[in-house]
Length: 194
Image 1 (cartoon, rainbow, N blue to C red):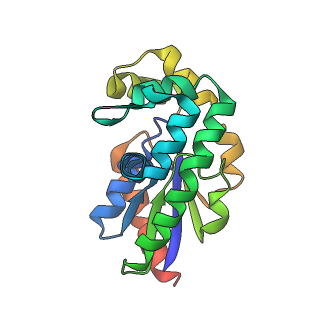
Image 2: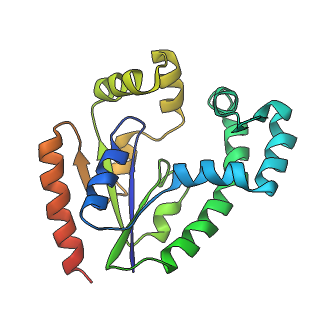
Image 3: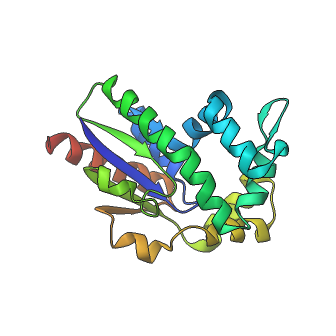
């Protein structure tokens, strides 16, 4: 099975595009969702995150995401350490997941596919882009956050210009109808390229 990496900066709409592939019957793995599940279920991740960030990293419901986010998005060194704790577990989980899937290809949606070198393990990569103003507007509506917080998160990701050089396909996601047509055309292309 081919592994198609799907990525894009925060607010680009990569999860929306991943859902379009899922509607076409393509198996889709959302790394961020699985990482959150693993952060709550893995005793090893829990122990290491508490050692790194302190007891406040977890609360009665599990991972204290707002605490962890505030911590990591303002300290690049801590962000890298958290990634080193979580990413190997997600990578192993994905490998097990792929073995259970059927079809010509699957989508692996990862926010930092290029930044963490994960693209090297993909047969094909898709970059979702959108103008910075559009991304900020989407995030302000979606996350009930501030522009300052959004910009801090964006600062930890590569620019689209840097990612474009590594992507096989770039889809600008500003018009849902156009994006859907592009996804369908790409799906047909990927099915043919077995």
